[in-house]
Image (cartoon, rainbow, N blue to C red; front, side, top):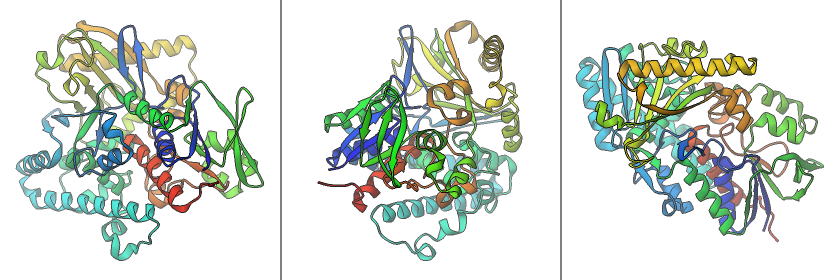
Length: 503
């Protein structure tokens, strides 16, 4: 059996490591942070525990592809996933709509949109059907690839063939014309980091089906329980997950990986190295660009990262749902319908008006904190350039000013809330950089533009034999399900291709 080293313990690396360990291979994971999980972690302030990044995971209802993966790996027995009764509420100054997940919620959603936009009824139905066709094609392509089978893209995945060069806005605009409706349909753009006019349409369509058809879920005990479960699988199958261990070098000899060297000098031999670190760090710092073809180096240097995030973790000494009658798990708060403008204001850091996502964790997980408390996450996408060159004093001042603006926006909608704030913490793009080393603090890895999606996205194979990639920067993409799929696909293909050296 092969010796496998995984660099970094994000979900992609943990998933591939867990599956390879289950197949009998010796797996060692090295993580520079003191806990495993990457963005899928939690942190404590005093006696309270906060979620670092997760809003919800889609596709976990029976029949969902991620549901099947969880069962295959055994995570369904280790992690309890709680379904959000209300998937989200979309909020505009003149319009609000609560959306539920699952087939029954999707039917209600379609009916509500058709009632509000009767002239678009046929287009809405056709659009939803096309989303499902895109989903079918993507899953078919994934299954065939993982099984080593060839695909005739012209006959086997016809919808994907047509749509993979279209933005989400282009796909939607072929069926509906109302700009207000298009904006409502595009709310999940904040989960991918680009407005519909720039976002790879098939990726957005697939994500849309994950939540609308197969529900939104949250792991009991926070996302850390998911990371810990994958760690436990590796350890129970004879592997290791070592934290506070920074990999300094990926070792190669004559174009093939031979292992890694840790910062403390230890050399770990390996037949296979899977890097969950971002590609720039992997190839510039750990491998060395001089070991790579110039064309590949250029590709790495040209990768466009997603935006970062600015996130407030807020503890309220109140029952938010009871006080304000809000039972939704997630609020998408919009000040206007123009999502291109929304994106530009996000880039420009106009905190007063950019789209704001509010997650109310007690609405999906009772007793999330102490009884009577409410935990909120207030998150906006953010550009790191607004933070990177500040002095410590300027940085702390900007954090306080940003927190004040976010709390004021909430107070304007929910009078009396601010006086109930018991504790808050703010993470910035610089926080993301510190803990993940992601360039610009990217929250979704490489952004899902048309030129960085599907076959145009960085592949999981590399020019170095035995070195592979997992995580948000490679295929299929970022987010929780994207990174889990990345690790799953890589493990499947390695095992199928017998790339792992056996004794």
